[in-house]
Image (cartoon, rainbow, N blue to C red; front, side, top):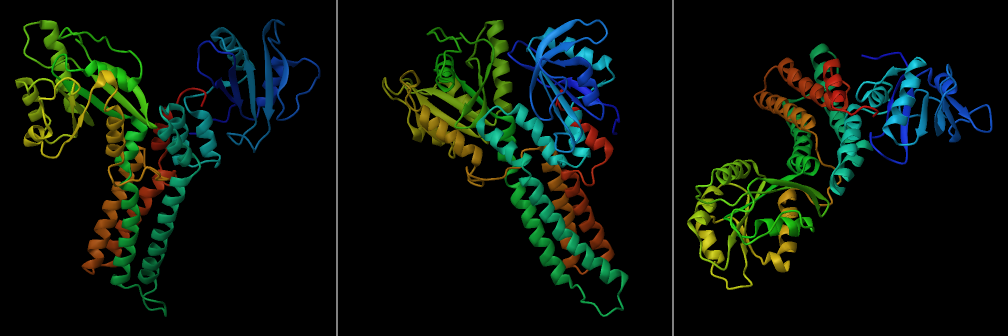
Length: 458
């Protein structure tokens, strides 16, 4: 599970850029750096100080690049090992040549996520914090970034450890009563067990309440814009993106395929799908686009269903409204600047619980209200927008659900005054599931799976 060799990788994205970094970690980091990097004015690198010089092949004397280099001695480094970094020009050629040179001096190419894995194995961070690193790298909006920062700081880990400490206290009381029944000790009662387990279950439930919002904050809210042809769907996409992304014409059927775009709406990552107008058509290509629209419709977190307010409800509108039943939908009555002929009462007769907004997309009317509804839908009334902690990781949610289930079984057995041995098994299972979140009880296979999702160099 842990490789002893010194590892190296490019720590920045490949492509054109001003700077690219080759990172080295391990006991040979300083030795390897001294072989390939020649300081311009001095013979020795000072710890933790960037030094200007050149990267040279020690065998041929060929100059590879001008660079800045720095050495960080352990244990106060990212991996808690000796770490060296070479800051080259950010071209693919310079980075590849520098990395190849470092590898030829004895370093091994790092596996995906191996630097962060070493930070975990060396005790600098726990598994939940390690997972936050990749969330930071992949964050598409301010709220997802902020949530990852809180997890990296250890907020979730602190809460999980607090719950585990309370479970451990229960396990100790149960064990003492099982192992020393004749000693003069305080006897744990079933009422105490039931109350203690219930309180801990409530703490887990408070975390689980945030999981749906956390998923959206991390992965993005899937929003599908649906409606009849020429109702204003592409104009709405452009208004939400605040740029002209989709072609807008008065010709019905202009959008033939699904257009997907990402945008941050008030700090929330949103994936918007502009679909082909749904109608009866003999055009084979348009029919394919309409079929894709219906598929996207069924997978959406939120449907922005547009109807033409200057016309009456068409057969296609009525069919779409019926299809949206039971789904999270927001009906937009568009083109109300012309002559409104559709009213909220007509919509609510078909979708009693949906919200409606009058819009005139070309005049930017109703866009703020749409954004407000999206934000309200994400937080759902259960999680405040200032909530300091969200469960954003599917693995964490699954383990919290397993722990909650195990403790539910334990509570029911305590209420039934079952044998303490049986209760102890379920309480311990909950304790172990929570330990997997922070890595204290996670198997090697789980740990390797977590880090396999990382990018090279991190």
